[in-house]
Length: 399
Image 1: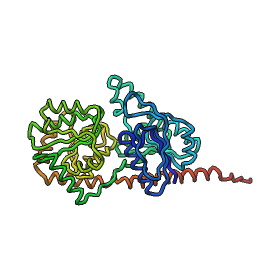
Image 2: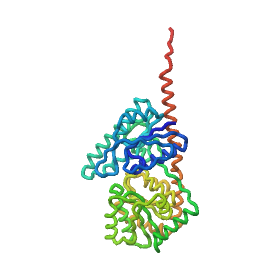
Image 3: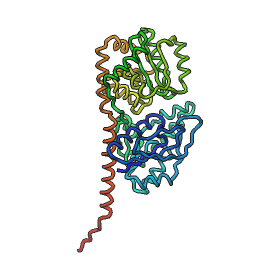
Image 4: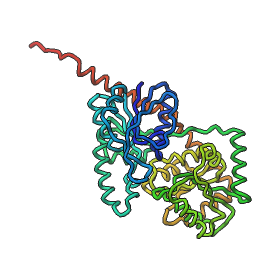
């Protein structure tokens, strides 16, 4: 099957959408399909996997933000669609609208991924959040009615998508590569754990972008509440972003300089070792349609402490998998008793960790690739059946 993938940012892209797209592409390649991608130009592009070609479009960047919009040039889009059997579109932008319009003209089945939320995008516009949210709702409603169907990473995300469209919405996990944890991996993680703890007993971990919409300041609220009870733990934060310096200064003012360490960006292998070394993974973000970072932590035996907010899929996942704790962001002190219980009762912590591993296994990215393959095959079958029916000669009835 010839699969076209369209997204404004890709290789390396920005955020969960790009990570999910790249994982799905790799899974589809391993199933024997051909993949070509159309994406915006990247300042420091990464190499796609063998078998994937990427054509770049000029982009517009609002200021110095990492996000950008690709110029929807019809020539490049048409060339891709004439080659493709099916097109997968993963960013809700003008590029998506133009691709959907041309795909219908070329009779190419179009699938759209649901990877964004009004709340997440509107957080960048604090004073104009109301008008921006209203404008986004109108845009999403117009856009998500155009593809043949949508795919969403969780049942939570699918419910949100159904608010915008009557098109079918299928749940396909963003997926993760399940880790192979052997003796070497365990030894590296144990070495890292000893180094990071430096005499303390419990390792709390967070991995993510240190940006406003991810609410990393809430990590310090949790840490401050826990520090009032005990100091035998350390919180290690891996990730970069514009809030890092402010967070470090805030931690120092709260007297948490010894309990909270900021590592900045860490390479993939080091990140995997860090997650395997941790006891609890803290997830304060209020807007997550799935959270690949949380799934990766679960796959490496981290129980999860998640903000319990209605705009995030993570607390629902934690509840259903019974793999951690949830807390109200405005009352971080409420979860401290439960965290203390886990730290002091290793058998219960281990139970939650094993539940996390079991739940993460169902998000193997290869299974996601197989689901997408089934969806694409079904669309092509329906399109072929419809075409044959329309070409069938009319039978005349003689009276």
